[in-house]
Structures are given as C-alpha cells and as structure tokens.
Length: 432
Ligand code: ZN
Image (cartoon, rainbow, N blue to C red; front, side, top):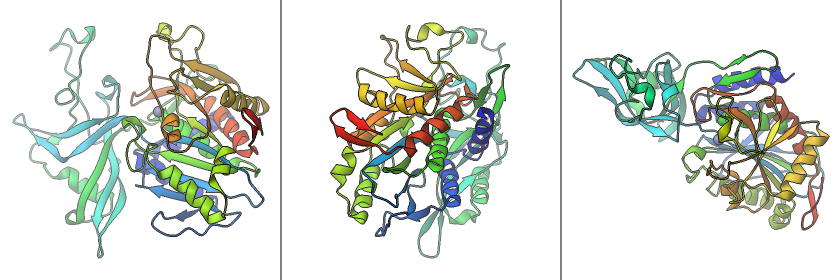
C-alpha cells in the first residue's frame, strides 16, 4: 500500500521538472476530479457544491471545494512547488577559448552543490511567446540529457576530499556542447514550447536532474528522487484533499512557489494570494470571512530532517525522526514553525483516529535550522496552524531520500484532516 503511493509520487515528480510543471500536474489532477479554473482577473461566481482552482504566475495554485451544506470555516494545507536549482541567465550561453559551450546560471535557493556534479541534467520552465494580440506563457521541458557539470579530476586537485568551497561562477558551470553551437539553447527551448524561435520573448528556465526516482533497500524501503522537498508533501496533501469525505468545513489546497528564496514574490506565501482568494470566496458565497477564519485550521506541510545514519550528532537528543516513522510535527520556540500545543493536539488526535504514526522534530538547541511557509502565510491570514513534514535525508540535494511508507502516512493523515468538520468553541477548545 505504502509502496504504491510512492510509485505514483515518483511519476508525479518525473512529470514535474519545474515549479510550473508541478502546478500543471496538480491542475490536471484537479480537472480530472471536476474542478474548474477561476481567473483572478475576472469576477467569481461560486455556488455551494462548486469545485474550483485559481493559479497565479503558473507556479502557485489554490484549489477549494464548497460544501453543499452549511460550513463553518476552512481546512487548509500549504506546501511548496519549487526546489533548489540553477536558473539559466538571460544571456545564457558562454563560449570559451577552450572550445566549449557552457551555460551561465545563478543559484536558486540554498542547495548542496556536490551532488549536482557529474550527472545528466536538462532544463525546464516556461517560455513567453508572442501571439497575435500580446504574449502567452507556455511550459517548456527540453527533456533530454543536455548538460553536465564536470568535476575536476582527483589528479589535478589532491586536496579536494579534504573540504572544498564551490564557487558558482567557476565550479558549478554546466557544459552543454562545443563552441560554434551557440544559439542551441534558445532553439531547443522554442521547440520544447512549440513556438517559433523568433516569437520567443522571455524564458524562465531551470536545471533539473534527469535521474528518475527509485524505491530501494531491504525490509522497510526508502525512496530516492529529485525534489522530494517539497513535492512529496504537495502530492500527499493533494491526494488527501481529493480523497476526503464531505464535512462541515471548506477544504482548501495551496501550493506556493518561491519558498526556497524567501516566499516574497507575487505568487509566494508572503503575497496576498491566499488572503485575497479566501476573501473573494467568502464574498461570492455571502459569508463573513472573520468568522470563517476563526473556525479554520492550516497544515503547513514541508519535509523535515530525519536523524542521519552517519551523523546522528546533528539531531536533537529527544527529537529524532526516522524514515518510515510517520508524519513529523515540527516545533520551534522562536516560531519558525507554527505548531503550538493546541494545533499539535488537534493534528495528533486526527492522526490517531486515522492510525497514522506521528513523530516530532525540533532543532538541536544550538542550530538555527530552516524555516518554511506556515508562519509566512499566517502573517497575512491568522489561523490555527501546525507545521508538519515527512522525514528525509540530504535535504536540498538534487536527489533526496525519504521513507517509501511515509507518502501513504501523509495521504491518510490528510484524508482524515480534510474530512474533519473543524470548529472552535472557545479559546483552545476545538471540535472536529
Ligand atoms: Zn521545503
């Protein structure tokens, strides 16, 4: 059972080489389940029983389903569509005197550098194309072994295994071909977008690892794949959202871009996207939004650090999540994670009812750790909220590792969550 969900996840990841493609995968799943698109630029006509989604920038998406009966508030989840990678610069081709054609890139997010080297890479994202009346955005995936960032041989740098500082302008420059092939990137991108090269007016292209995800190990198995952070949560939350039974809360699924660069974009968790969407939804249904918000709950879902098999010393002494150990609840006194005793209690009880194991994460007290999108989203809309994730190793490597059973743990937890009828009967007193 657990394995099957993770095999579906591997397919989902393979079809999502960029944040734009991840949102397209989600869109297709939603349309298959009867959801219709709303445009932010048009008036919204929404009725009880409606299933809708709205995209922003093609890389963030919010979906919701209006109950046919009275409802009290929202049950939301938020995960992110982006992952650390390299973005190709506008004038992206570098021709050197050594006879090579390379690509000029910038780092997107904080990545582990070494695992990007010596493996087949490609490029995907979006291409802006001229139309008869203006411009339009099209998905583009070059989808072939196209690039590679070569290491320096051990014979040239005997010290490399004693610690190495990667300089992005020299050590991390991908090789694409030989000099004289200039212009190939643009023509490949135009072809991938189904456009004439002369009609291409802009490109947002990102590198991705071509290696497909795999399930491995003996006994309880593991999954290794690109972009598990955070497509494993994006996928698990979506499956739970779609599988849930109708209740007396309105389910909302959010997928935000740009978490890896601080969320402060037009479509990130630090934008007005969620707030505006909930306001407009309430206005269309004639519901008072402060009351709905007070009866709402957010699950901020972003992968968590598992205790490392070779370096257990980085883990906190009493918070040591394991792969395949169940959904991880994240805690932080400085509120980098939104979890508090109330939200933890609600989520833990939902997991118990769904027979999903729960584990806990907190940073070792002298390590700052990372942050995520929950507390950023809550700066715009105040809700009860818990931060969760699935335990993983090698976070921000282009090939990460998690538990093959945990995808299913998250799907079951989120199905139970989205099926709940949540309401607040007093401060810290919740019914669900
Ligand atoms: Zn993440």
